[in-house]
Length: 464
Image (spheres, rainbow, N blue to C red):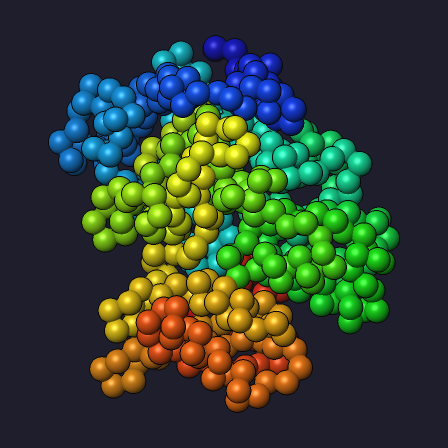
């Protein structure tokens, strides 16, 4: 029997330190790196990735159906010739080839060695959980990329980091724990969601251990600030949080920082399959795509054609480092963003994106205009000083027309003048009429499920 490598041998730990540096080593390695040098590295890694992917039945089937054969894809220039795929395709593969699907290659390596699988899942809040499959190498690269972002945002070994990512089989809590403990060196409080550790107990833990940073999803982080005040604790004084690294909708950054008494807030983007793809750095000019690890395409949701900078589109990701278990080539996240034009002020060779702006499969078309719930939330918060940041959009069918109502939680007076002003702001910016309802703080929680879910519900589609 062939010797089975242990986790750390398979992870190529020593090589990863050089290939995917973090902290000051990242600054030294990537600042001033030319686009040509970056492209050469991408091409090298892509050649290895595509060779492995051709061994995988999922890709043989997906590409073969389009008449694509080995040798047709020779470089990244050919990448758009390949069809993209999404979560539905993965779930179909799992259903046809249970329990893990046929998109992994643990037994497809040329040396015949069976590779270790690290298994997690999605939360399953929208249906059956998706298995997320990692190998030691791909897992540790993801951890290093996340640690790279945390360190660039200002996290240090001296920080006490409160994590509200979920655990159980869900990937999030385990992934960030590994990144913080293995590569940042900070002290971690792995509190989890409000279901795992009730909110009042989370506030107690943050106060007791003097938490200085919070990581997780913005909706629940903001909710914890409200619970802290309900418990008589003042964020920033009794709980000395100075840094928040979170998944933000564009509606949350300013209000989240204010809720935690001026804490610095940094946004990052990634999905369970890929890990961190892009992160906001101290220049605050968009999220830098970690292009030494990913190739990110932005494509029109309807045609699939790539769009120019400044135009909205679906993010389609190719992970250049995932050549051990599950190669990811042109995975369509259906998350919408746009590229930021111009060069990085930090001297990095990486492209930048605006971040998560909505989901193309959660988009509502009103009178021919595409409307994203997260974009509506951003506009409402921007024009309402008393907004808590909590909102919900509801869509109903009125005869032959779809109508949307935007609910916004507001502190203080909720008069008609404010409501009319917000409706006018939405009409001016979006070009379509959307009704606004102003609600008291906490009113929407049963509908958004902000304390129960990793990602709060922002759209209720009541047309069906």
